[in-house]
Structure formats: C-alpha cells, structure tokens
Length: 190
Image 1: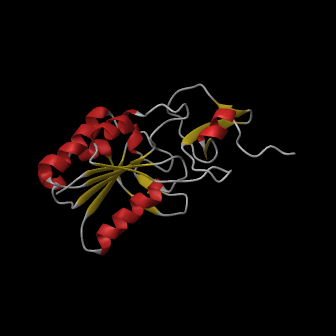
Image 2: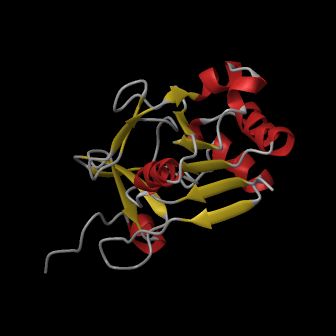
C-alpha cells in the first residue's frame, strides 16, 4: 500500500542528500524512481538536484510530472520530490492522488517553515494530509537541535522580507529556537 511521505528539516539537515539516496536505493534494486522539484528552486539549474556534499542528479519539474499521462506516471515505482515546500496546495493534492489512485509511493523532502517560522504552503498541506511525517534532524552551532531557518546578511539575522529568497549557507543558517530568538549566529566572544 503506497503512502505519501513528508521528510522535513531545517536548512543543512541533508534533506536533498536523503532524496538522492532514496532514488539510488530504488535503482539499486532494479526499480524506477522519478526525481522532481518545483520550478521555484533554480539554485543549481532548472532540472538539477544537488546536495551540499556533491551528490547530483537530473530531475524533472513538478509541473511536468502533473502534465504526464497516468500511464507514464505508472511506469515508476516511486516519485521523489525535493524542495517540496515551494509546491502549491493543488500540487500536493495531485501527489496524494498518485498515492491514492495509482498506488505509487510519493516521498517528499523540504523545509517545514520559513525564516519567520511560518509554514510554507506545500509543507502546510503535507502536514495536513501526509501518511508519514518525519523530521530530518540537524544541529545549531551550540549543539542543540536546530529547528529554525535564520536568514541573515552582513548586519545579522533578517526578520522581514518576502517568504522565498533562494540561497544556501550564504543566506541561511539552521539555529535552535533559543538562538534564533536571540539573533545569535555564533557564540559571543568573551
């Protein structure tokens, strides 16, 4: 019985590496898995999924998956979606239709919340309807579990702005809730 999975985590928690490893695991046992991402994520190219540790694969866009025929989708044993937080409610509902009516597991990876600790649309919908929801953990510079995605610039943590601003370690840092609230990107020098 297929399920809709949502694996979420803060920045730098290895979500993309996990997505690529899931794809590899399907291939290793002779099954076909399809990698896709939303059109919003253009950091590494329109049709590339790349992890910080250097793993990389070509993918299709979620809109292209939605445009595929049911017969074409059924040729896959699993659908893997990276950066799913950028998906719309309607796109998430389509992914759930793949699970419910085509009996194909859909494994989604993404951020739960933005730099203001507000849910992204895709993540909010997945929290509401996914069969399995699991956190991919990472740590703050202090060693505590990181749950917040701090956006920063040369002046420190940024608290206002548009929800989507693409970036990686150059703009975002995973922090524990305490250091996010305090605006501490690193320990104070004594």
